[in-house]
Length: 548
Ligand code: F6P
Image (cartoon, rainbow, N blue to C red; front, side, top):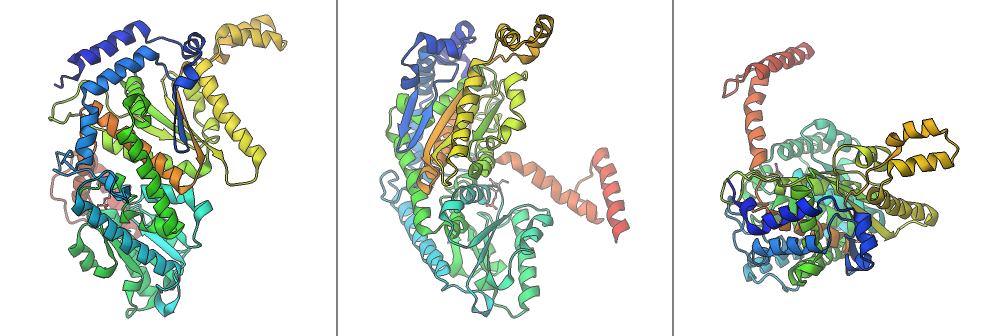
């Protein structure tokens, strides 16, 4: 069993929670007129207001003591220096190198050279495609790009493309296909023209079942439409760490881009895995994205913990999970373009910190990563906010707002920002039964009715929120935002003493599905299935054979 909870600094937090756990955020503001200013941090057009958390100055002090005891700063240096901190896979964790274009952080020369040479190749390729110098069959310039990948080879590029294409679009239509369910790829294949389409196969391993199946379907589609003699090298490029497998599929080495084992899938949008994104937003914008990520890296590495945005967010997240008992974390961006960003954060956080043993392999006796979920505001307000306001679970929430929109509907934008502030205020303040009753009486509701209705119309409030502002949703600020959450996840992994960089939990299901797949085909799987699976297999087989 892990010893975390016996540490003095953990117990100090527990003791503090026992005496102050029920502190009211609104009273903290009453007692401290500097709170709003003091608990506000900014860095290059991204700011964090963390004043609406259930934390006073002592809470923050104790959390920082805990971070020091967990040697957060030394772990951060070990990451930057390229130590194999992903111990279960014996790998370094160097995604920061991907955006360190001037070599300000990462000292490993070999890594820096590899990154810059790959960036140069990407730039060259993107330029060729965008200038119409890379043509498909019949010498037609590329119009559609289809990214075939899943998980980290899909969600990051998709989130960034959705966020940035509305303002930075190059004119290419970029589509993202990930699901094993062929309805996904078929929907895209119906929308593209074969001779103007480039398929980008993004797979670090080049073995992922979904990606391989979709890549084959894309190849069949092209062969069928363009004829057996078509030069498919014009229509397929790939990003992978496995050159042999990629070559066996038919990828030309000249258009195979590298992916290294020191970049985790969910941290890879900054690498060549971002090729489809770069094609969709243009090379300069891709570089601005890298610069935004790097700006946040510099902040994370250099700023003292007390003024360090990812550190503060990580610490407060830990306070919410381990001491206030929160089991989830809502992500609520008030910009439609960030809707898919939530999906990316879900993978980033849950695949990284969804761990139940510590670095030494001992079971932890404290909660680790929360369930991360959300929806873009204001859509979420009309769907699930009810539970956040009046349900029985504590749901801390990150509100993300863009100060300057990229449309001219100023009035709608003002409504959006008003909703952000109103929601955080409502979640903080709540409304007591007495206040609810008084309001109803004021509005002419009969006394008995008001008394009866009051519990239904009262809100507990005191729900912790962060408010993040971005000046604009442009590549630089989006890069900062992405990197901010990567570092927050890192901070929490260190504090919880877990390995945030492996993902063994996705393996078992993959393994079992191979055998069940064979069983469904009638050839008998490798293992004997349990009674439930055997029963369900017989139903499915019956349905499938009826169709034949
Ligand atoms: O199944 C999870 C996962 O391993 C992710 O971590 C990864 O991003 C994704 O699958 C795709 O892997 P690959 O890039 O090797 O196809």
